[in-house]
Length: 202
Image (cartoon, rainbow, N blue to C red):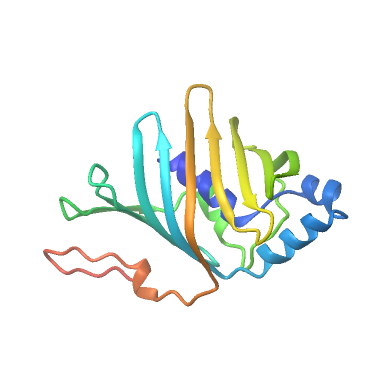
C-alpha cells in the first residue's frame, strides 16, 4: 500500500530534469508543463486493476501536502488521508482509525507549493504522442524495479491512466471525471470515527 501510494503521488507532483532537458522545445511538452504548473487541486475517480482484483475509489489532492483516497469497493472498506504530518488509515466497516507519521519519502514529494515538471528522483525513459495520447514511460529512483507508464489525453492533458509494473505484478489505475482547481473543503482531509465522533486536526 505504501509503495503504491508513493508512486501515485509521484504522478501527481512531478516529472524530471532529464525530461525537461530533452523535450522542453517540444510544443506538447510546453503545453503539458504549463497545464500541470497551474494545478492547485485535483479530484476524480479511480478504477484500480491488479492481480488481486478490481477496486474503485475517489480521490482529492490539494497542493501542498494533502491527499485523500476513499475506496468505494465493498471488499476494500478503506479511506486514506495524507497530510504534512500524519498518514491516516480508516476502516469504514470497523470504524477504526490508525495513524502514523507521514513517511519521509512521501513528505518530500508533497511539500512543494506548486506542481512541477522537475524532479531528480524520476527518470523519463520515453515520451511519445500517438492516437491523441501522450505516453510517458518512467522510473522512480527509490523503487527502481517499478516501471511506470502514464497516459494523458493529448488534447486537454488530463491523466487517463497509470500502469505500474514490478518484477511480479502489474497494476493499472484508470482515471475518470477529473476536476481541476475546484475548491476542496478542509473537512475532506479530516476523518471522524462514526461511533465516538472524534476529530483530528492535522
